[in-house]
Length: 479
Picture (cartoon, rainbow, N blue to C red):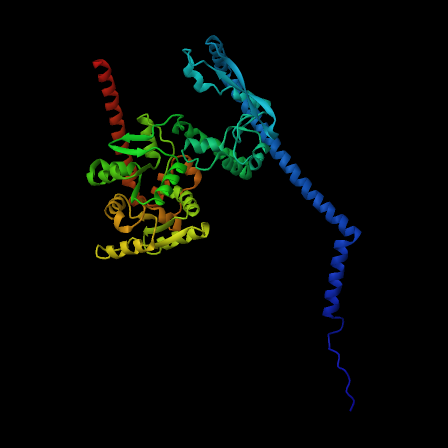
């Protein structure tokens, strides 16, 4: 019996290996033959051309829209512009051109009215930028874009900032909008880069829409008192950067310090709770939190430099703590909340020392063990999220026993960073409407605080304003 090699049996005409090889050869021939290469080049060219055309159309539409709006505004404002020009000339001023950098860093003159401070028309300087509509009409500027900077103005990270000159400067900018809302925590270059990278027609329309109420929110004053005083509460008038730096410095010291955030609800509580007010008076730092405090400052002519709240501060504080080598302990919230916030911090600031964390559900009998655990952890900064005024009173009573160098009452901060409660979108914060977002999330719990409490707060502030004016008049007569 002879043994013969048995070939694999396949149905007639079906050879898988041969079929796969032929398909591969055919694919390579299509891709790398002269005809295939020409086809790929044509496809690449058409894709590039379509993108170029789309971008040019978008730029042309934006320029056309700016021009049409500028023409309409110029026609409407012509009588006012002519009147202001006459008044400016009569008062010794006139129409000025300030040197600015435009698209591709080209130089142009930005039109402004000038009314000398000594003239009786100096108050009209509030309208000095109206002639800028001529720059938009000429194509030097857009309605929305990065701020028009002077040639000698130095912005940080200039190599990175060069992208800002890819677009025409704007009459309104994202930086201006955030400054009006007191939440311009990043530097101007960073916000310009954010605008350039996300620039779109809908984004510009959103900025324009948010600019209308932002005008009435007021802006940062050139001069602001170092301390704010109203309704018996004293607040340190700092920026976010200054507050973060001071807290980090305190954390490297030997004393036990307390930091408190104060919003309209806190001031209402302090108005009737003497123990809480005494805690605020003894705190080493008391920081302005929320649109209510800002409105109170405007009413009382005490300009709040920035809205400083624990939720916005945490990234700045973690970055500073990471660099300084100080540690942090999180206390408060429901079970699992502090854990989630600690995980968020560890992912973004891996070099920061997390001393520990614990939920806020403990009895009076368990409190000594909680304090001992914090002390043993060696925490320099202790964040306490037990809700105001309980957290401030708890810190005042236990900051020495905890061993922490700085103890901060942070309210619902851990809920936000654990992901339990979503934060209001930036556009709502730019409008000063974060409080409404919180009400929408928890209407039953928040309605009294926001609708009743805020009304009471503003009434009290207005009353203090009237008393201040009355005292000033009385003093003036007596003198």
